[in-house]
Length: 473
Figure 1 (tube, rainbow, N blue to C red):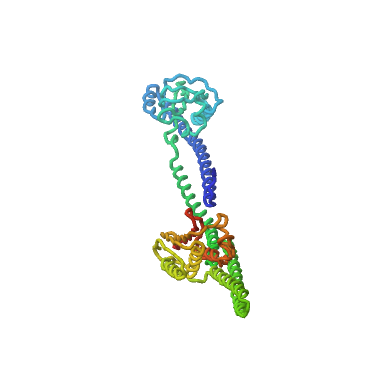
Figure 2: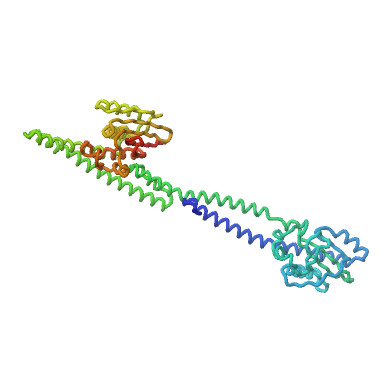
């Protein structure tokens, strides 16, 4: 099973988005930790200042007035009581105890060091209730979800089971004032604005990353498409030498390679065509001299050899012309083309039947297509006696199948017969008059149109040649 995507675009996108997501999560974790600490400290300072103000107010009042004032001041998130007993001693060796010590130090700073200040931690219940006291010691059931975690990440909330500071301050007359306070509701909530900001940032970076990666990888796809098309059309338009330096350099190198290949093929074609054409002159002279021979049997052998040489030269010229892209592409009525070939072959005794019809003209090179189809039909009649043409056309491709009733081909020869001058021993050999270039010419023409030709043995006997020609958009 492949975990990584196959395309370069998907891999680069995965790396960018994965790294960005990890960075955002780490940044969020650090922010949440620091935010929790700052909020805890800020809420502690506010509570300590309020308690100190209340203590100074109570010192100036009589016991009767204190009772009335305490009822007024005792409201969430601060509960004030003058009737509670002393808090139990606490040990400052745990994380929750550390928070209590920090709150006690703040409180002493505001009320003065001459007063007795005791701070503990209570868990659960409403403010002012009788929840279990923790002092500065954390009990066993607090180990997993209390301590120095940020307030919004602890179990419980302000409305039910949050942590509460319990502070006792001795007034000037010795009265114990007990204060239960808990951080405000806002400190317990998730920072939704921060989450929204991170989400918007992440979405914007994802969009920009996708655009950047697509922009960076598009030249590779363009180059791959051009290389694929080069195999079918050596004279395709050159790539645009624009864009970044590396892209322009790659396009320039590709265009140079294409021009060199085209020049080499053009020179080779011209040389071979000139040689094949020049061979016609000595062949003609040999034919004239052969007619002067008195021995009829020897003259017949010479004429047969010369006729075969002429056929080979003509086929070679057809083969070389099949590789030429100079013919203009224009709409071709495939059915009319096949009917004209059918009429030509019937004059020489060939039997050709046509089934199906092309839905619309095919954009191609008329003479090249005629040469291709003529070679295939002549082969089918030569080795099978008859030829049957089946046309299957749709919006994407035009398929033409040419079926014969001959002996077929060995499976290992179905691809080799497309090689120039290749002949199969047996029924398809030199004695039939073939030169081994008919199928090679047909293949070149089909590939020139961006299509494909395949041969297969029919189950009922005979050979099937199938042409698949794409319809250019």
